[in-house]
Image (cartoon, rainbow over all chains, first blue to last red; front, side):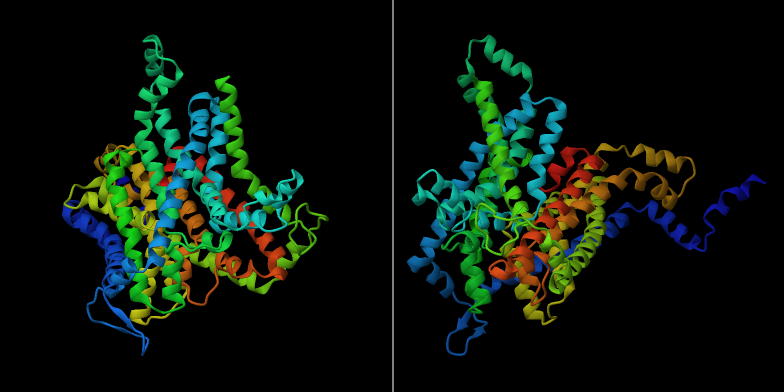
Length: 303
Length: 262
């Protein structure tokens, strides 16, 4: 009597499906293969395949007379990159600004992260935490655009500097504005890992350090800094990498070019895909070296 | 003394984060087309103008469609990968997590260019689906991180208990496993959608001549007569992105939201 209570539940023409699933239950390798097939297929064919294609095309070249791409192996693009001082200047500028932005964000993020992790009451903390997240998730383009409006002639910053009588100090559209805007854009990426790193330091470490006679600065330098170094490295991956690959912000708030702008223009305007691909190898190599160093500093455990 | 300096630095930091957003919100109510500071006269007329603008509506619709499709793909593939990595031991397990993070760790322009040259070489043409491919590729990791974090925290023994009590695989998934990961899926999906909705760097390479909302902003923000509408769209985007952040933080505990983008 009670036996028909259970099967009635799902009214199943799919008993074959159930039998198949039952058989599958005992074959864990097959389960794994089924789980992995779709995500791996997607990544290998669509993403890694495209990346490989890009790297290969860096060794082709654009025939200037026919403006068609010649599919024979050449190092010509890389020779141009190394020998032409224009590209060296652009690459150095990109890396320099990425580095300055990274240090600026560390300086601004540290007090905020410290306040969140060690001073704020739990309620304040969760509100402030969400206030750090919100700009991170709100549109990148909108935030750059907001700065374009603020920095443009006759805008807010112009007005501020004119009102205090120093009209020439307004950054306008320049490398300085790029520095401000990039620091602004990636700041939350630096706050979050530092916050997580600071929160993990047990309070007893501070007491022990104080008991042993250390004042604030030695405690900071010899206890806190070594412990949050992985977090700093983790945050810097984002501030550095995101600045390195950007080409929208330089267009909107400065008159300078970044590596990304050259890539974009060679590919979209000049149709020189091989050269664009070759220049794209530069940020990939820089990031590869950067990630290796960051891993040695323990950045991946702090993510 | 130290405490006071800390408070000042923190306040200054938050002002730095929020003043630009506030400024753009004010400009959306600027009656004039000229964007000078201070604003002379306020008005809400541009909100209506933005609503009536056909190209804005088309761009909005495309962004929503792409976001939904990319989120769906990311939910399926991200969960599959999370189950595989969390529940099984296999050769190359570490590589899976590493490969999934690549589209976010590498500069977006590299991903964009790679997809662009592949699309051009295969001749499939630029459609909504090429945008979806680009977006899903970097959204997968968001879902993956949320689901795997949830699986790590939940015990497998409740599934075994379900099986021991006579439930089959489907019933166990439906009544035990799925409820466990449900909120992680919602949180991951919301964040994936937000990521897709805002993306511009990869999108410019995979969209061809189509306009998503960020691309619409990018191509119109230099035209003086379009600026008031750009401002309105910008404010709407800021408000829209606040919702997923809030909801995802509630659903998954704030730690996971922070981790999800890293």
